[in-house]
Length: 169
Image (cartoon, rainbow, N blue to C red; front, top):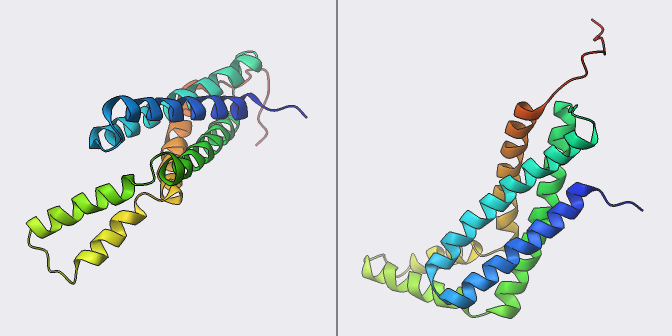
């Protein structure tokens, strides 16, 4: 079975993204909020770069021709594989690599809520909402959304039809 370039690229850049996240967490500290801010920037950059590369290599494979629909499919396939790799690593990270990170950030959030004089009966609601932000499934929709946007833009900019084919009315 032949594995497509978009799948290979999604796996490769997804793993690279995870490795960079881990290295950043080890060097800056697991409980430093900047690690998670930089993680988002790295994720967006590797997502966009991967979509562009996937579409570029498809265009090169097709001898310079690229249908808009094929560009979207290629970009979304890359994005889907990339998002799955990130979700799996997110689960492993928060459950095995640094399992107390969520509790640390929740205790920090609780202190901020108390400091801001939030009613005690409302605090569990806010903390539960905050805990859900660390879910691997919460990671998928934004990655897929930005992958779709990147695919649409890349497909629109890189498409090139065969001038020798006639469209029927």
